[in-house]
Image (cartoon, rainbow, N blue to C red; front, side, top):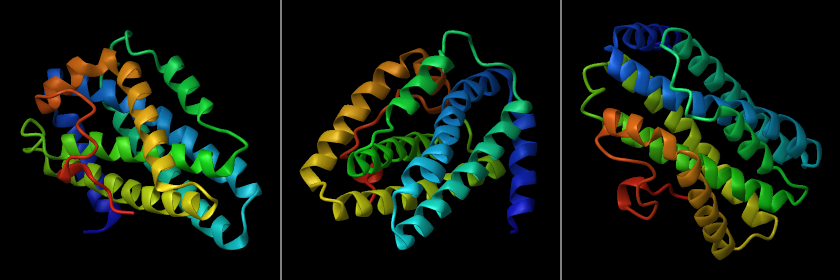
Length: 212
């Protein structure tokens, strides 16, 4: 199936979602859109300028992926009701912007940790029995997760190359998870509606690991 055809199927499924699922989905997508937009700028600007040619090619490819994801999510949101006002998207944008730092290894480690968390959220949605009837949408989510998992591997590898240890990567990931847990507290109800559980799941669970 072509990317264009799968995108149409996903969009048709978004329109078909019953109101309770549509509202919950819009809540989570608002948060994800903030992350994709911030990642596009991070990979396409601050990191790229100070990278080698080989690193630059990888980072620019990631930036292009993130821009595509942001466009897809924006299209989905346009077909959904507004998410509840208690999810502070301004705070979400501030959180994503604070991930940027002049320390390139730390910056990449933070991005890897964030993308790994996004992968776990997407995995929950992909396995959701509530969304299972909407196969086009699930396929669209799986495509985004596939890209994000690759971004995690690239970012971690670059961070390690720049001197970050695996123990450091684990510490950064634990810190990002703790911050995300607080940031996404208002979205817990939406996650329960869609998946029957809250976020984040155990990042060390076998089903949620992302190989480096």
